[in-house]
Amino acid sequence: MIPCVPNALISSVHNFNGDQQPDAMLLWLEEHVRRLENGIIKLREEGGFKSINLFPEEPPLCSTAITNGVKVRASAVFVPESADLQNDNEMYAFSYSIRMSLLPEGCFIQGICFNSCQLHRRHWIIRANDIVISDVNGEAVIGEFPLLLPGGKEFVYESCTPLPTSLGSIEGSYTFVPGRLKNPKGAPFEVEVARVPLQLPDYIF
Image 1 (spheres, helix red, strand yellow):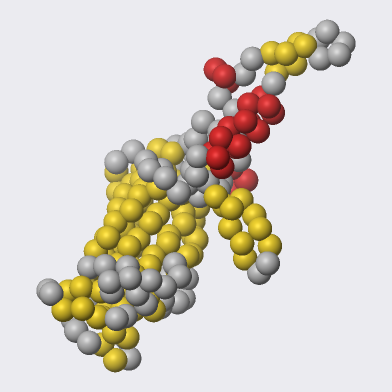
Image 2: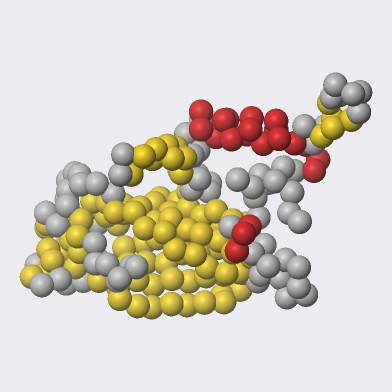
């Protein structure tokens, strides 16, 4: 079983019977509150409901890259309920979140400004202990071709990947076209997705 709190931080407190009880729950709650207060994780609202988004929003666990006006933020979390650490061939599971948007200035390519761009393809490189275990190319993301407009709302999607080790990374790129796929205004261009660490965290939420 994976502890939710680092063993080195677990201290003891007295309960009403004088027995020693670990205060791991208190440490877990304090860390959760600290991350919310510092903006490492944030509240999100969907369909009128608020929830805590566990995907980190700050570096080094959240990467940011801007290419030709397209901003891509990425982060990942460990998913303990999908991991299998009981067998000889351990398998870890990570979920990653991608947030992409177009800056208010629009999309700039070789000095030309475009007021929209649309995603066409994706390319992912996944590493375990710095060894490439997956190199994926394909169209769309989760079956969609997001159209980005200047200063518009972020397009957010989430996916997951298994990993044979507790340490790895994911990075890649998207191919966009200026304008729209049905009416391109120029040649396709690559947008960077900066490397995101995949690692077993100290605290598991």
